[in-house]
Length: 493
Image 1 (cartoon, helix red, strand yellow):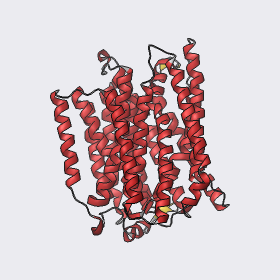
Image 2 (cartoon, rainbow, N blue to C red):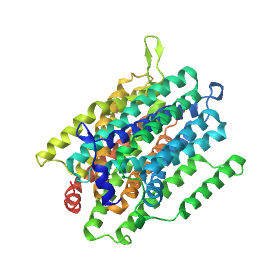
Image 3 (spheres, one colour):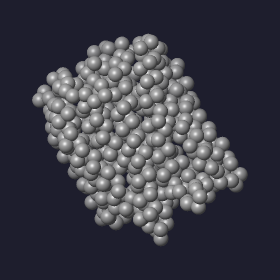
Image 4 (spheres, rainbow, N blue to C red):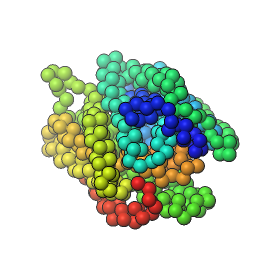
């Protein structure tokens, strides 16, 4: 994005000391996350539900694999979405087009057959890929000065994400329980429609930011045309029955493909992008942050997979005679983030004023350890289940509280630092790489969740204990490399 665009985005009216454009992006992301988290709260439960109860009747392992591919895919396409915005249409058009695809995809889930259902998942993944990285990239342009104010802005933006994440599971979960699964998907589509209308009405506050790519940066439509052709061919093969892929094997292949893609992109940045020595040092730091992010999200995304099944099957959800839908518990994490995000934003600002703000790698280490502690709690809860008990929701609530603290140490901080470390002409693509880490982590989450076998209940505590050790070791590594990362960041704070 050009300096002129950044300057115009930072000027204009303010709201509570923040650029007015932040409210536009806040509400756009809020409604997109309403749609995403609302649909996610019922997705795996819909897939494992018996056909006689309106579900797909799939087994746990297959459903977990599909869940991982879908959630991972929504972030994987962010890399392409960032490139399309940077080189072809600009961030504003990419966000609007992504919202339209998300609405259409959710309507396909609500109205279509089983085959159309899976095609709808694909349409949603492309839509999220267009919307998410570019909304975040435009937030960065509102703060060209960088520093702690940008961190605070991203924390406010992150509250919008989680306000949608709180409301979505509540509304969609209740609608699905009262009226059926497909009405829940329709409610998700309606939420995104509200977000799109709001964005189109108020995007004038964004100024020229993201309106169009600079002429010197324009690319060719050929890669997009080839990509759409591949997608169309895959759809024809699936709809005709000529291809019957194994979701479990496909998930494993997708993980390797995403890993290769991420490594190849960083190799390009380090050796072929024409960056200077300081910029290459910052790329090395981004590699470490992305690796830690993959580990974090592989554990965190158990929320909608193994932990969602745990809530459905092994948790006492009876409240004064009302059996609360399991999907509603998916709102707990977002509620905690809304509650504590201002606290963490104030903490980073206070530490920054005193020159004691921890380095990014140190914050990531704390986030990984807090996530691991949550899974230690889930391990103890799962041990009680193997002893024949149905447990209270408090086990899940305590786990999500710890996961919330971990997320606030890692996710908004990661968004901010990736935007600050990124070479200016690669800002959208770097946001895409950040979401690629979420994609790979989410895909791995589906593979990990598939290790839980309901017919062998002892596999459940084993799964949670393995994730604890993964995150504990990753956190220790991030702490050890913190001094080196601070030097390589070359003054970025």
